[in-house]
Length: 436
View 1 (cartoon, rainbow, N blue to C red):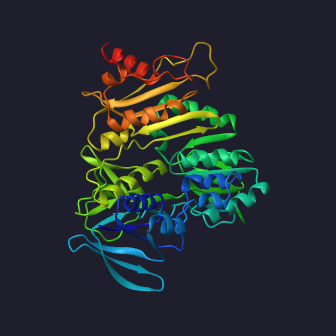
View 2: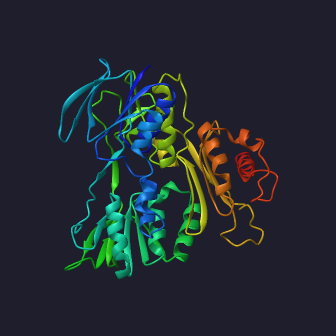
View 3: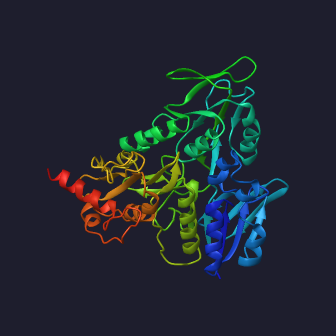
């Protein structure tokens, strides 16, 4: 029976531990804190009360022990890895450094929050949203607020938090410079209009300073001073890794292939601390959905499951400000950074546009390689986008070509009331446009 050690009790770590255990391995999971990590994708819902604290702590350590026979060790973290000798050293409050041997190791230590370089961040009325208690503290203050400045590094977490806050207060959402470039021009326009209808203004660029005498009165950004009576900051994350000799990417994570193997033999990585090899470089996939698939794949392979590969698309699908949105894959900037020659096209013949209201019209964009026409990203907004999410993720994870997508069989989609998937139709239109 192979002995698998798992570092980290977040989404990826728990998924890896369960998959390894059900695949026949002896599994021990190390978590540095005193409990398993919460489901971070649910944290914004604490702001409106749509989720309780019980909802976000979805993983039960007793179930891991009793149902899957996984040994869970709290208050200990794996501090260093010797892949050649196949052992790790642990450290933790109240614990002496110990040595543990392994046949395979899964590193799923997530990311750590980076401090924001914002002047005045220590003023009363500033909430740095790192943990559930921070969200709950802001939620208790909301009845006394009229306008909140929300500072976020990227979507979708920032959009969800803005929407939850907008039910009670006016919100100005400051996205880090360049974060909106993740979206196609058409989708940016659609989301901005939907946000405005909910009293949320989206500003492209972060905040330089928080102004006020005794408490928050305004924020200063590159386009001026904007009054507010509270500031909520979603901190940036940086991969958190033990001392390990594997190859690391430009974002600081352990580089993995689609089987979640690192460059160190017997060592796998998954979740926020990993970067997927792509082109001449690597890209991070810091989403709950990606973490789960990466964890399961790492756990299966760590237990001796062969070369199971993850179908990763880096996708999310949700309703934002009343508009259905699905995003999968990388953007043009990310692609070019890893040596891919990509083109982005918006569908200028909006599907369903025959007199339909703007929020009903389905807008589709694709990001594909210039020569091969292999698709590396698809975005959709409007009615029916959520029903297409699995289809879009499958297309992107397989890097199918436009030609293949155009002639791909698809089931009848009732929400679209047409016989062919809008993705197939869009691929066909793009091919026609490329041919002149």
